[in-house]
Image 1 (cartoon, chains in turn purple, red):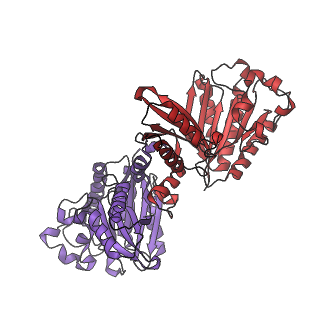
Image 2: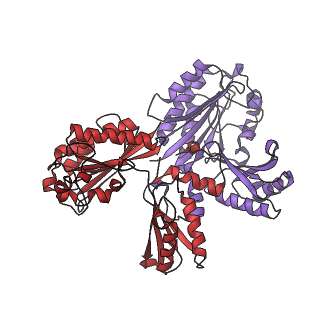
Length: 292
Length: 292
């Protein structure tokens, strides 16, 4: 059975009564599994992460959005995190046996519901984006809630769903589909940041490296070493082991070794499949053999 | 929350009505998750594999055993698989956040229930064995059901629980605790079986190798190569990567490469932790970061 994950960002991180009411709406139907809920007071923002069968996740997300749209008023919202709507960003993330195409169907049903039923302007991003210039969240959200009324009047920022006029209470929502991220850092046994920068250039898409790698170079001051900090945005197309082996190889030309590495935050177990196949050569192994 | 697995072997593999009644008893209480159920007509045997909270697994196993003891009569049982009782073998296997000691408490409660409430003689094996000579299943089961009445009269084969006299209807039950097995095969790019045999000698416990490795050498006739076929009986003490790297190294002295490998059957996800830490150097990684 397919598993889809939703990561819903709403613009309220302090009013626990409101947050609990929104949370309760997730469970008022076919079951989904709440994996994480994170409220940040400074950001004044809460992120709900849950997963389940694609249709169950869609219905839970519609209920959640209806409740958040009802209770949150953007006219009084303040917070340090960029945002443009009460239901700010809703990525749907295929976890297991769900194709990008199936997830897109869910994201578009959700967008149509928000637009047509709740009267909220909707922008599709990432895999759901219909135009390249509207693909990334920062581009869509630039100007934030305060600049939205003006931005929506530009023809190139006409919403994908819902009213073309500004919704002062609810702002606008960005939704779409993205692949699960893997946050992978490689720590180099040197204090020379220029070496980490050269390696970043070698591996990231923007400078000719791997298509699905975003990377920056950082000093780890406390440890006196440097780090290549990465987001792998599609572990099927650009697997962890390949990036790691390339970094080892690139570092070796400077006589630099890899000290250690970090996998940060949640890691989809399916990202380990290619790691196992590469290092243990178990090419017939199926992830269905794993038990927990 | 801790997860314990039970792998219950009963002596019936043909009568589906009986098997279904036994299966139903598993679910007549606090929930456990049935992972696998395998009936074999030739063996005339069914294996139920399920997991859950330790106490839930204990109660499910007590219900299952009571039903199987009620319905199965060993006096008429025939099958090609060695067996000595209606409820033949019941290993409890710690999967997650359950210590061997906690699993032993469950196994002993189960043994006491079988012996005292159901009147079935019980032998403890593997981690639960009280004497070294009674540690392995083949030693306890030698002579099978047909030889049991006589065997039980020997002082060294007095049961650990239950009546000291033969129970003709139910035979005897072997229960205990073992660690999850990992079946791992390494295929060598040679047709020379003597090389696989030398490597088996190098890695298995019986001949001075790793403590928790059982290994044999096999020819893979169809592929024209040879295999080192292994059971890793404790992946924490003797991890997969260490055995694999040793085999690569040992093979190299004969100029032989590893062609590929196989992980066979169910693999506990926790066995991958050391593999990831070794190959990706992610020493701070916690398996709790994985999602499915």
